[in-house]
Image 1 (tube, rainbow, N blue to C red):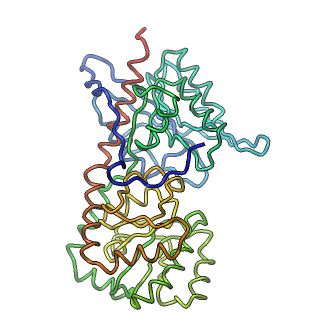
Image 2: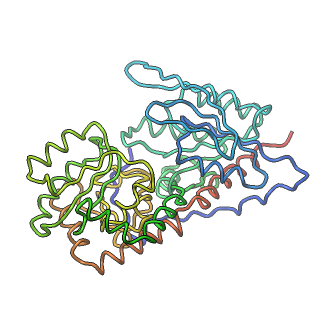
Image 3: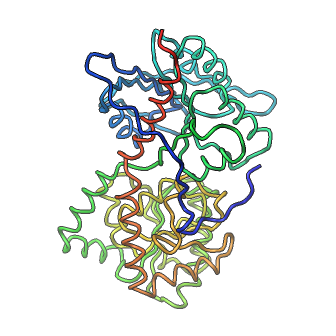
Length: 413
């Protein structure tokens, strides 16, 4: 089991592993690599990633995606796609998956390299890897590389499965290095594609609102956001512990009477959170904005805030907030976070509070809200982190390197 790990300090936040230079693009006379990405769904935020990969010279991309519940699949745009249903199976009280796309495309007639979802719950995964090897098809396993509900059996099973593949592709360097240190594979087979968002729509929405300060001021007046603002944007699920943010608001209001906490999103905890706010006397301090999906409508909330707080379980919301230049406050327990936590750099683009402590959360937020110079430094650090290090081009660089390595491992027939 992975030992609990605290969020790295800036000096250890990113682990660099030696990588051979990516294989140069294939000559025009050589057929492009036929690459099939198998995914449980085609989420909207993944479309720019696959479009960028498909644009790379020598890559002929097909995404075979399923119909995973809770994720709305969109149409392919800039690449080929085909939907193949996923079947969930309950075996002895555990959920497993059967995705025929994994096995179907592990054939030399259909692909040169397949990139498969790396989860021990796929019953089709090992047979697909074996079929790919038999058919001389390169294999890449792409996934988190860990589970929040990790067990020794699950960890060892994941490592054993990886041993059959040509390459493994992680969401961040920290988990990749931990996998190597655990002795599960050799460093040359490990690749990283830092998970991120396409910031094009964010940058466009931010620029439009900033170019019209009178409109932004009117929005702030309409929603009573003239004072310090703390923002949360995501699903209102119990795992995200938004109740801690509500509780911390009561403590922060003692120092900042005009504080506003804005909660954008909906979910199963919405009614309970509104009840908690009312019973805590915070009806005027907390704005429940509901679910907002359009970036142009989200932008003024981000641009009106001084800090973004995601109590725990943060993922791509970290990238979203930092793309607007918002410092992020979250738990210091790394194993309670998603892989995107690697973008977090303590004291550079955000601050971590002692996990589980409402008082620590309040004090950490206040240190930003009451010090404008500190807030500006963290804000610049957040903006720079995303736009310099966590962008789509660099993410796809990692994918392409893994794909070309896997292709090179399969002898030409």
